[in-house]
Image (cartoon, rainbow, N blue to C red; front, top):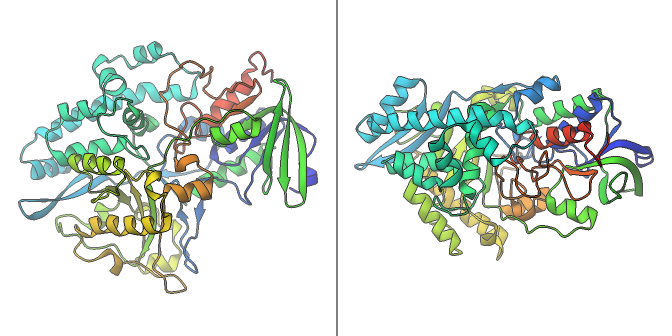
Length: 525
């Protein structure tokens, strides 16, 4: 759509064509509203895109967001999306060394196999039974909490009654998650595997009194009502492409290359100003839904921006000629890398890495986790690469806050990547470097992104993948009915920074659309 076409007045103008904005656009257009999506870049998808990062190599990687857990089946069904989410055959593998011998913990492949893996590592059935009990509890909480994400925000007491388990409520909502981990588990490695879900993109200690780690943990174990993390077939871009198609099919107009620079609202109508290479333009709107960060929202409306929440992760994409062999010969690499492969994520290792980073140092043993998308979904690779046995690896590093990169982003990135891969190499029977594919220019197929890179590339404030610190999924002062409201009655925040945002979920987009369609006072639809 050209600049002169993005004119007139719409029922809803959506700022940003990321997955949440596309969800909102599809819902509103299907309800008969006139919808215009204005996207700064030349493509939709935001952080949920598939790209070919390596020159001359036919591999479409989920470059930023890479797994799906929090996307409700309700949204897929409501919008008629033909999107396949494929479960991983293995939950996780964690290599270790015990008594000078390589070993590890493989979770998956059936109950008996998992029980035997716990017994082999720890010497008894105790840890496995604790594992079953603990995740039985989180599963019950997931089934009760997850459906509320697409409903008006419950109060804290309403959610507590819905959970209907005082021990679970205490462990997850009131006490630092470290207390539950230490109370339930004895083995350091098992404790670490449990804790990692509390630290994805969240810089916190197990006993942080802010409970930021608990909020992160909760969102990582309630997805889909099961906590399972699925692989989007065709890569993350297949999901956002399907959303864009659904929005257009319902009548929404999507204008790429249109950067919104100002939103003026009197609470009942709004004027949206955008910029294109040809100049500036304006469009009228009854409602404006902002699929961007809270900081971007404030900049558009002239409000005081909140402080950015610091990002704390390293994202690495790789293409391999083959999967590396493991020192632990009891497990097939095709199983070990199919789930989440935990590296340097023992409980004490995580605490040490956090303390070192909090003191301004790079962790000596950087914790990270890896998974291989192409084992579950080979369609992201060209047929020639599949035939030759190529595989992708996605690595997500923990406890690397943005502040560590401020002095020299490029140099620190290189240092951190080398140290991170060194931790992985310690568990491999061959160096990972020997397995890396090369691109058309002969360079190794590996790219790393720090929080500062993500801030630059995706406009994520502080490089935080959630846009801001994750919130509890219940109403608090100022959260509004749906968790998307702003101080401007007809301007809504439908990005990851909304209450119950974060991850690839579509929840803020759904909830912003519901707020419009509900036609609450001041927001007549």
